[in-house]
Length: 219
Image 1 (spheres, one colour):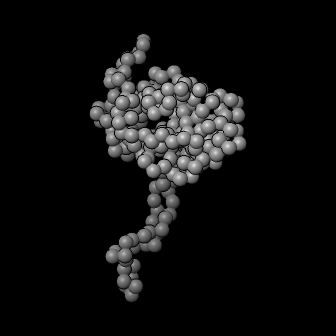
Image 2 (cartoon, helix red, strand yellow):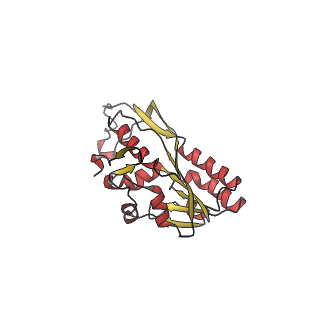
């Protein structure tokens, strides 16, 4: 069965990889092959992410580029970029009860503070659009979505119920979102052992180009 895998990169990162740097050198096509059935012929893996900022970690963008270069060695993997938007906004200030002032005393702090808000935009929309487009064009027999984002419930439901094409959930958590579970035709839960068995070689050879080495901070 022709199978396309759609990967919400930041959902995968924050759910499974952020606290496990040794597993960040991940071949997501190998991971999908490991957790799906042998009958699933993976024709494409679409990976959704955005360029990270060097504001807090100057070396972050460089490490990300090394990983994107590693993904580019797999012909079936395509990378689709969203963006980060940052803005300064006022937000209500909340304190635990023990730090709140006595009502009769003047407040030592304002009711609001200005915060820097950074939001990733585009990944879930891009994933949903490509899932629907591929389904309408008949590009797959089965789709698999790696995410736990409830924003994807409706596009998955449309593909499964209206277009009658099965969409499975590759869950980065043990207890996936109930609405996602109901919309999906099957669920595969990703484990740490699955990630460990799906790493790129280190170094990663590239014909005609320098080898790629896993960033040392990920070791």
